[in-house]
Length: 77
Image (tube, rainbow, N blue to C red; front, top):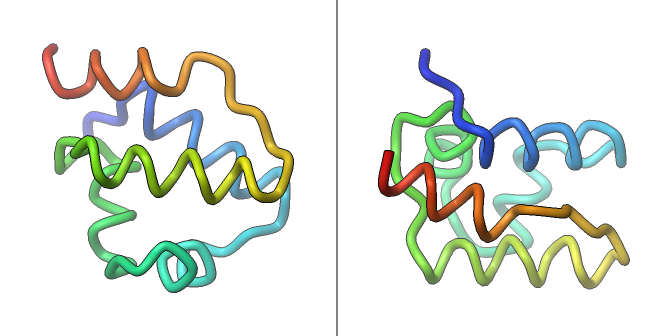
């Protein structure tokens, strides 16, 4: 498994705030397997998914510094 910086940031934010992968996936309207695959680096992060993830955390007042840059790097290694 080749975890990306994006994946590490999202997973840490989820776990630090006691948010399950299933809860987050349901909230943003994606399959848990897709969310998991982006966290583990198996799937690239689409612009649409990144927007949903940012809105999800933003609505909970959770700031993840460098998330957009990390997503860009994970898509263009």
